[in-house]
Length: 100
Image 1 (spheres, rainbow, N blue to C red):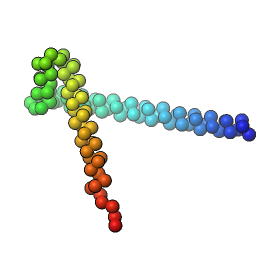
Image 2: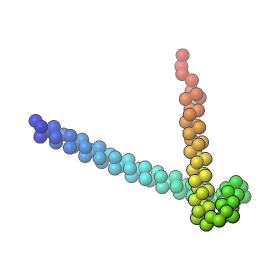
Image 3: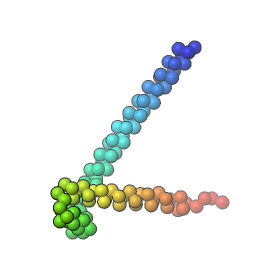
């Protein structure tokens, strides 16, 4: 009886571990895609005249290397996107009032 229960639990643990590893791979892929998108946005903003270029040039004038200035711009963009998503998520429940 104990051996059968232990075998069942071991099977459950293996299936959960397999699922966790699959989710980790999915998350890693998503993080890489987001990082690549932020990189493309930052490089585009540096090329065009605007706030991104101004931020980049300000960092360069402050003594940052090209990579440090690019990293700072990406961080700024990431914060901007995160705050948009956070504000949108907090506003979402109010946009659909509960039925009476």
